[in-house]
Length: 60
Image (cartoon, rainbow, N blue to C red; front, side, top):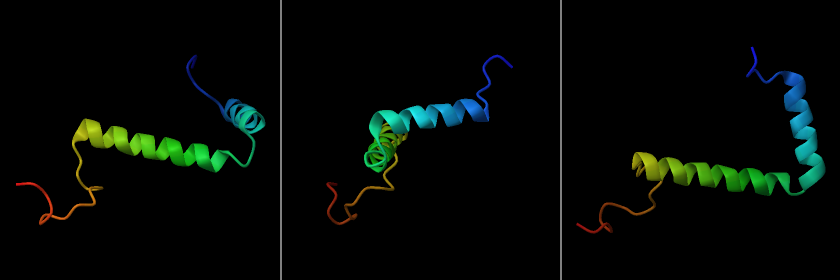
């Protein structure tokens, strides 16, 4: 398959990312990407499950 990414390509990609950013910054990058994806899903789907406000404090 022309568009298939194999395990060696993934290993090479992870190695390049590790060399560029370093091991100390990888958790920060992962956390930022996770929060970005969460905000995107919330914006697209209108999901209120992560909303910290309670029903009493919401505007009616």
